Length: 135
Image 1 (cartoon, rainbow, N blue to C red):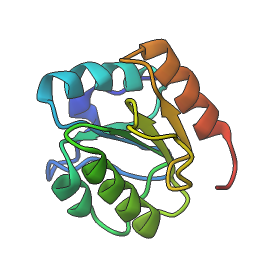
Image 2 (image 1 turned 135 degrees about the vertical axis):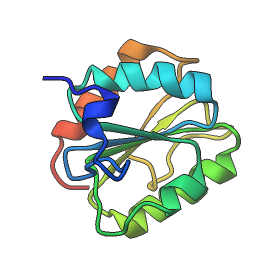
Image 3 (image 1 turned 180 degrees about the vertical axis):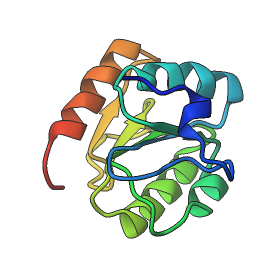
């Protein structure tokens, strides 16, 4: 059963954020909204945030099964977010969205969707990562 955004939010405005949750990091508010709809199809609670500051302000005792990070505004920002995720939630899988400027073999990320923006490719790779045990 899919939960609407309002159902996902607690009374204090926070979202239950646990091992079944997906964290989507997208700087552009319009893209964040459309990408959130794609991620909602995975039938996991989705928390969509704008960048490193939002991610780093999440409670350390929260958790998630997948973090999808858009490369915009920069690869440096995406890497900074991924490093924070690895330190804070080491069991979370990290899916990079976008085309890295160099060969993609960075062990920080679990997978990458290189296409401009293919909802089907994102869903397929996200499902695969969520179903994979361990790092």
